Amino acid sequence: MITRREFVKVSGMAVAAGFGQGSGERTVQTPTLDIGYVESGPSTGFPIILLHGFPDDVHAYDGVAPPLARAGHRVLVPYLRGCGRTRFRDPKTPRMAEQAAIGQDVIDFADALKLPRFAVAGFDWGGRAAQVAAALHPDRVRAGVFVGGYSIQDVFSVGPPASPETEARFWYMYYFNTERGRAGLAQNRKALCKLLWQQWSPTWKFTDAEYEKTAASFDNPDFVDCVIHSYRHRNMNAPGDPRFEADERKLAARPKIEAPCILLYGADEGLGGPPSPTGGGERTQFPNLVDRRIIPGAGHFLPHEKPEPVSSALLELLSK
Image 1 (cartoon, one colour):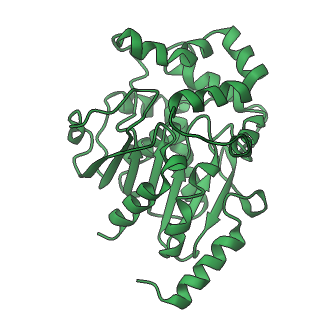
Image 2: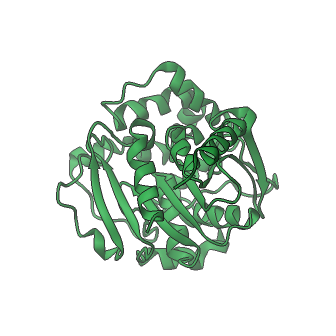
């Protein structure tokens, strides 16, 4: 329980950090990337890393971070590779974004900030990155809130086809596996990504201004290359980084996430479809699952749409 004096101090620090505003952004150097991020809360608080998905950026957590900072946590929201202010340090480095790479980015980010342990939350690419980090480095991740369930993939095999209705929802992925799709993303990135927001969260009535605030991050010079590599690599249409071959083999076995966690699902999920009311055996991958919650009025971009369940779930896990 924090005192009123501490509350005022923490709130002031969050404002000073400019959460969600360009003026409050910072950069930290890792072996591969200069990672842009936004920080709020006291520097001495237990760290929480919030990871956005595709197509999105740090603004996904504008409503999630303040309650965490007020509770005394150090809240860190990095731009994923290819987004916003994050840049590759070496112009010669291939612009790859396979799951093992973005998971390692989380660990590299924590190492650069000297964080031995931390909590994570994420959705879409960010959820996968968080789970990869937790699976391969269980000693580092204390707890996790994951939107959409288990998302680590076996990139060495092609799974069986889903129903035609489900396959149709993934049109963008097949599009990106063609050169026409690469050109279309490069030429129409903001319009295309806005369409994905509308399709994946069909009940979310976001404004043009709200979208444009995030869409500026898609102007990153590495955005197209990273997106295309991610979707081609997971469909066996692009090589991975040889440095991550061993990690990808481990991930192909779909390892368990040992950290205590809470799973959140948007009731109006437009990409994977509505979640099962009873679940699908999540405890196989999450043996320390604390709870599974379906959030009404939210779709794929749940932290944007319903931030309170995300912050509450994190505070609940970290109070144990």
